Image 1: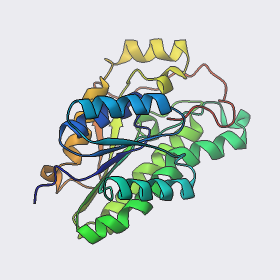
Image 2 (image 1 turned 60 degrees about the horizontal axis):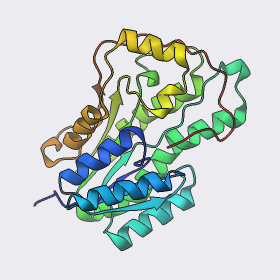
Image 3 (image 1 turned 180 degrees about the vertical axis):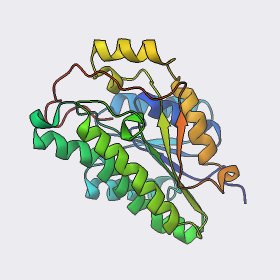
Amino acid sequence: MDRRREVALVTGGARGIGVAICRRLAAEGHPVVINYARSAAAADSLVEEIESAGGRAIAVQADVADQQAVDAMFGAAAERLGPPTIVVNNAGLSVLGAVIKLDPVDWDRCIAVNLSGAFYCAHAALPAMYERGWGRIVFLGSPGGGRSISPGTGAYAAAKAGLVGLTRALAIETARRGITVNTVVPGYVATDMTREAGEGAIAHMESTWPSVPPEAVASVVAYLTSTEAAYVSGEDVAAWLGGPAPIRIERAASPPGGPAA
């Protein structure tokens, strides 16, 4: 069966790596649902770009930390394009600060966006995937989720490490249903979120690793969401150059409800 027309939903699709992923999946022939939290203008512009190139796309606003909003987003996607059977959980939030100084409100928001949001999206997507006997789920992880943990990243590291565990458990649960579940672990990619680490951390990352283009991450996602990757599941796949090294963080914790895709 030709799976090039399966509907793809990308959370945080209007910013950073998400933009490259949306473009790549649209170029592969997939109708794309571009999720955004606050970047309405950017999402609408990306829809126009994809449609001008002959693709199909819609923009849907939802805070992935809100389960009801996620369920409504999947309902809107199904009504307008069809049920998403490719889901890329890209939306992310960086909260920085030593645990002793970290506001529990910041902790809760970081876990809600980065980990609970990924669960909510998978939970909403799975019924249609089970019915079709096919599906692809990709989480966007981080070296900070276990490969390269740094002081001041406790909340973010815990959330991203949780994605690895969720990936492996869900891969086992869906192994006989034609569904694969993987995490992509990008290296240093220059985005609005990585800039939150501060100038010192950015200088350190740029001197340690070559910057990974968002398009390179998108190419890994495109493979994992393809029919060719039918036997790759439960993996955390690196998309970076160079080994792990701790990142120096020079910034206090983000304010409650800080920036998210």
